[in-house]
Length: 129
Image 1 (cartoon, rainbow, N blue to C red):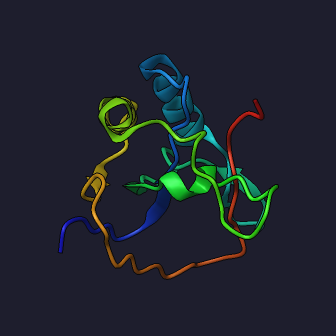
Image 2 (cartoon, rainbow, N blue to C red):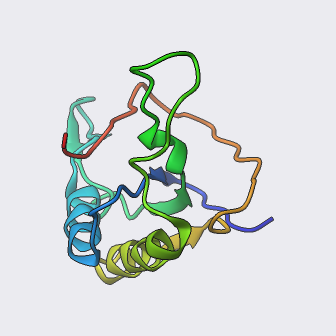
């Protein structure tokens, strides 16, 4: 077991060419405050901070797959491991600085990730380039 949380978010983090530690810090702040947890009226009105949730952060370059040509995805838009790992670490540190307990995957490793999805929420955050 590398990382484990009791309740909160599984963050699959894809790092693209051109992403920076500043981008990572801004995304961490957004994730910490994103109101995607239900309140007593079953409305999405609580953030990870509000529910005192944790985050399991797993690097996932395959999120950057370009499938626009042919049958084989291209990952040319993903940052190289040497450039991505410091940004991954910066993201985890920034999320921790926001007050969110952070567990990590093993950067760049093949991992079996298990998820119990408690609710209907899966959200993609990012910007189109």
